[in-house]
Length: 217
Image 1 (cartoon, rainbow, N blue to C red):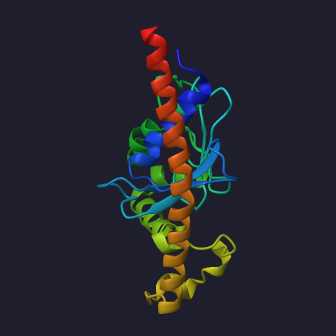
Image 2 (spheres, rainbow, N blue to C red; image 1 turned 30 degrees about the vertical axis):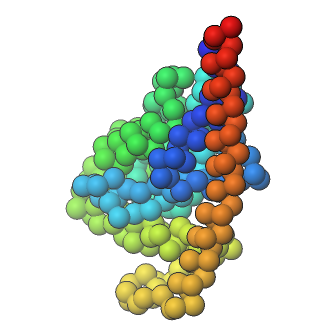
């Protein structure tokens, strides 16, 4: 049986090697942000969210904490905190699951099949049950306002309040300076994460070789 720390290293590496943009926090692997795209053929298609992941010391025997950082209109996601109501994470987590399951299965299923009978966002649940057309419209409005890539990758000192109604509705493109600034920030993120990826890769490779040697002895 692998130790929790070894399993954590392997799961984070698998997530990064699967082309997910991972932004580490405080140069550690217990807390990081992941760029998550809304599933195709859903109301959330085209949306991009930054999802905070916190791994407890006992991971994978204890579930990760998952939360949306930018706003999303969904019955099972708290609009203020971004916390997620999902049984497979909150109640029925198993060490057989990993981080790829969270981002490739659990979160896409949550967005595809919301459950208004067990809500964290009562307004979204009520609207979904009473007026589905209005509910779908509001989901798409939130995607346009809070879940576009240039918003997700903006510097952290740019708050939601700085997005005026005029910016939301007039469809104007960003200035060239804004585009250059976003590209520079993206490049910094890639450079920062690439060093972390190499460290994790080396740790996992070393542990794999060490385990193989022990097995042959």
